[in-house]
Image (cartoon, rainbow, N blue to C red; front, side, top):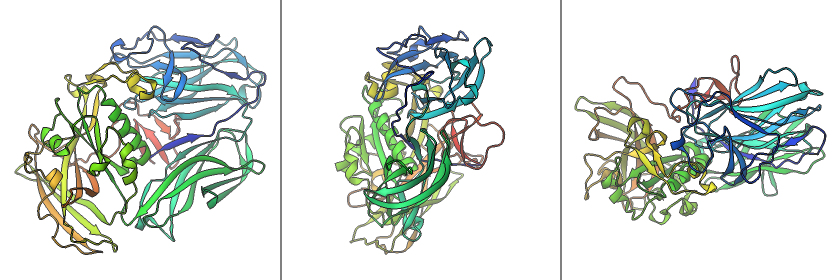
Length: 579
């Protein structure tokens, strides 16, 4: 198996349904569930009250707003250690007609914690619940789910959602309906990177990869395409019937020109329906793949710093592994005061892209003008090795493209070590939080003082023993690391020793973030990251940390897999795995 880290972006065309006998939509209003909906705690385990604000814990489910959505159903799931949530939400009994589906959107409110749940059915008079499907939500973005109910046609049934998370935080459900699809509708997961290198292009194109799920009526003769405005870039003809609920994977050639941004849309057109845009995105190709180094200034004591965390989550969602984050703390247990001073931040949260001063702000709004820029230099770390004197030796190579011109500018290698910190390893961790609006997503519900066991600080910069107020290679680079004169279409090797940060016995669990600096303005030209090795030579993966403790296998759209999975991407223990 190969662990991968990718960029997943989901979108759904709105779908209208006809009104017919047996169809049902759960309409929550003013924080109350509609008549006939039953909520119950089926195992008696209560959520930890200190973990929440603005949500009722006296029942198994609560109603409120989340992000841009109003009237959402929540199941608080942060339980005592060893306890499992058992929150059941049961819809009114109904008779199922042929062709009806159960449809809903689900998400995990707090992306640090996965949410597991089941959809269960009980036929009238049976008294027995049967599991129709088991699901896992691994991120705080909405994901469309569907279940075919045709096998229960003509039967009176009850349906329920049961949250069974083990140390989750809060499952959210929206747009819950039993219906017959009546229009053409699709949900899309786009796996196409935003940034490409010239070596990724073949005959002027790169590969756009995406998955489309038919969430509307079954159609025959669909045309799936890529379009830039009115220009059709590529198409795929789907001649056979595309059934409701069926997911298909696509790989289409996306034309690109070097250093020119390509905006495109994924479209679907039926034989008798107009062309619809399912999702819009962009791609950018330059000589070498572009990476976005994002410095974030933050502190546990900062009331509004959760906004910076949300900004980083949005960047990760948009750009995937093209984003390299460095979180520098000020005034708390993780403070790196020297690096913070060098950043020149006068307030927090504060963020800057590739050390470009004009991009700095309390969020990422200033990044837009600097996202797509030519990259004519590439940095790769070839080797990291531990030394007997408790230093780490890094060996790297810098390549220049055929279009590279130095214009008498000098370049250097800079670097910083980072580490992830979980509150579970330090009970003195906390996070102030004054985010009370639904637009602040998880922070709307996390308490004003977020306790240690709900805290997670990723990519925290570690102070270097070599850094002081006048010298700091993290910002000025290693003098002599690159030649004074560099030529196009060439390679340059660089080796340097990294001292162990104070308070550590080895380099395990750290990441080396290295970058090429312009020695004139100290802007970052391009960057890379590599996990350090522990003393046992065991490498750390680049995936997100597993927090659910659940080793079941789920499809990328959240369905539990039984038996041996086919080739593809799956979620195992909270990580994306390629089988």
